Length: 127
Image (tube, rainbow, N blue to C red; front, side, top):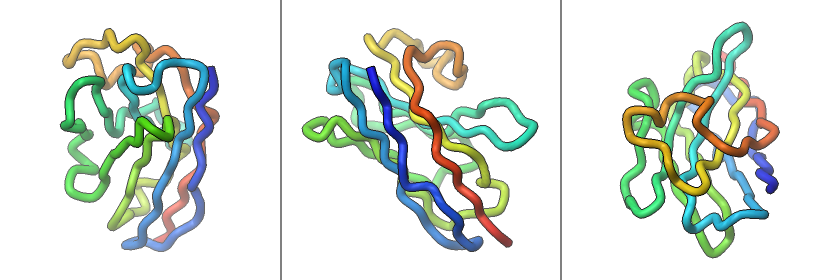
């Protein structure tokens, strides 16, 4: 199994980035895919999730209306479009797979429940 995250970088506040996570080694189309982030000195935080079999995505409150998760099952890739970035969005962003998709709704924000992780991509938002 491999999750390869990319797309991070340095951007000014108000700017945008699109993260990608290319997956291999498991049945991507039958998996839930999420994004987490971890700022220096902080715990890993849930950002967004695309659940298998559900066209809706779920977001942490702080990114609603600014971030959009999408997935392309034909390309085994999940994306995170991040708009109106703020300095507090600065973190290493990780993609994660729940495969087979077993995490119940009340548990989606806990990193311990995910099976596989990408290596992370750094997003730095300057003020």
